[in-house]
Length: 315
Picture 1 (cartoon, rainbow, N blue to C red):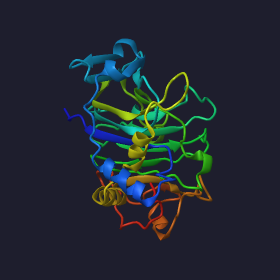
Picture 2 (cartoon, one colour):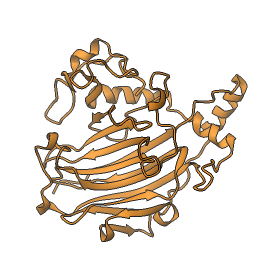
Picture 3 (tube, rainbow, N blue to C red):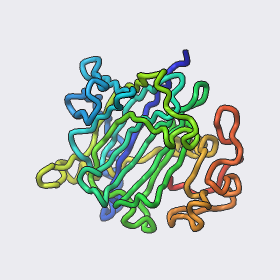
C-alpha cells in the first residue's frame, strides 16, 4: 500500500498595504518586531473551529489536536474557523488519502462567501487526487471582490516549500482580496474536473478517503462579528503586515516554481488572449502550451524546462 502524503501548508494573509503610511524609522521598528514574532502553539479543534457538514465523517483525535475528515458514497466533510480574520498566519499539517484517490479534492482555503455572496474573496489551496502511482497535485487560486470570472489558477507538485506569493498591486484593483475571511478545510467529490479534466472519477470501492489535519494554527487579527471591527491593536496589525518571506525562502520558491509548476494562468492564451493585468509575460511563455500547461512533463509529473524569467514573480 502506498504511503499517504503529508504536507505542511502555511498560509500568510496580508490584506492591507504594507506599512503604507509608516515612516522609515517606524517601518524598521515594525520589521524588527516582526522578526521576533513567534508562532503560537497549535490550537485544538474546540478552541478555534466548528464543523460545517459531514456528520460522523468528521472525527477528532488526540484531544482535538487532530481532525480527520472523510469522503464516502454518502457525503464528504468540512470544518471552518469560528472567527474571520483580516490579517494573519494560518497553517496545518495535512495527511492525504493514499493509493487511488482520483477525483478526490481536499481543500484548505480562506473565504468570506457566507457573508459577501456576490463580492466574496477567496484564497484556495486545493489538493487534487490522482490514480494509483501518480502524485497529488496542488492547485492555488485567488479571487477578490467576486472576481470568479477571472480564475488565477496555478498547479504544482509540491512538498514543504513556499510556492506562491500574491502581492497587492494597482493593476489588480478591487480584485485583490480585501475583506475578512474565515479558514476552511473540506474533502469532497470533484470527479467532474479534478483529475485529468474529469477523465478519472472517484472510485468508491477505495472509500473511505480520509484526510487528517493536525498542527492547526490560527494566528491573526480576528474581526468582531457584531461591529465588524478588528479585535487587535494597530501595532499588532502592523506586525502581521510586516511579516514576509526571507531571501532564502524566496529563492527556494523561485526554484520550486521553475521545476514543478505544471499550469500557469498567465500563460493560458486560449483562456486569456490578453493576460490579466498583473501578469508580466516574457520569452519564457514559449515553455508553456497555449492551454497554460507546461510543455514537457517527466514521468513523475514534473515540469522539465530551463529557468523562467520574471513573468509572474509576484506570485
